[in-house]
Amino acid sequence: MADMHISSNDFARLKKKMDKPDKNVSREFQIYGYELAQKLNDMTHKSLYIKLAKEKPRGLLERALQFVLDYPNAKSKGRLFMYKLKELETQKK
Image 1 (cartoon, helix red, strand yellow):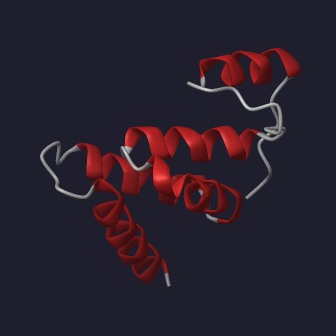
Image 2 (cartoon, rainbow, N blue to C red):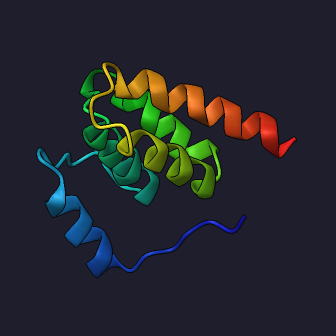
Image 3 (cartoon, rainbow, N blue to C red):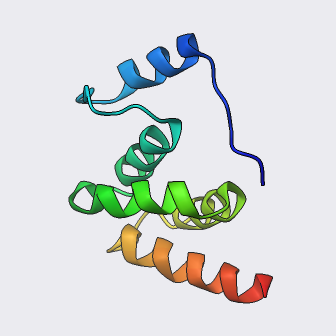
């Protein structure tokens, strides 16, 4: 899967969208991981989501996220996300 390239204008727009823009954020996958953590209401594990955004195919992450968003009353969205991501990876093999 090719690395996703974004223009500097798009990057600036995404960085402003974050709650607390961090001057150390320099890559698109960092913003994507941060947004995953926000959507899953799991900011304590944001570094995990940034790592996943860097290493895992975006399609798998999107499918796992959509699965979690379909369950709005889940007690632990982060745990459900990781479960579904593992399941999707197993199916892929």
